[in-house]
Figure 1: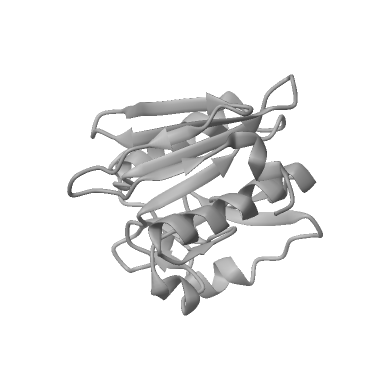
Figure 2 (figure 1 turned 90 degrees about the vertical axis):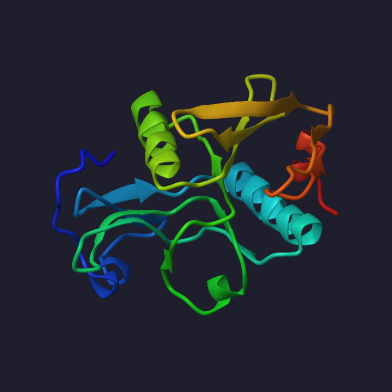
Length: 192
């Protein structure tokens, strides 16, 4: 999270050319590279299925995963660059390597390897950046998909609705905000 102190960042080119290994991605935290392990098959299957649902239901472009410059230094370098499992916004996602601005929504599919600290840091960074909608997903101990739809109310995230398994997640449209969205969590793991 930003402490309001100007920080030095890295250029977009440096971020995108940072060395990493197979099944790894590189994020930028406080102007330094942080190597993250990529999730496994259920993780990616859930993310890809949610990408498809956002594009189908909201009629916008999404990418999985998506490079997002969450925080820029005054010189335009990246202080904080995250890679949400799904980034939802519009056509510019087709033409930019790193998204700069505030996307319409982001999805994080949490894995057992994610720490509470990491999850809270990302939530805080996304909230401070002005992200309006965060959809969190994870596999519960029973093997069911759990989804939590949260909206940014400025000082914190407010959970609008949560659902697990075969119980549909139904999010009403928000006047002046996002469109309606609905999905059966466990359907995200089934082939269409």
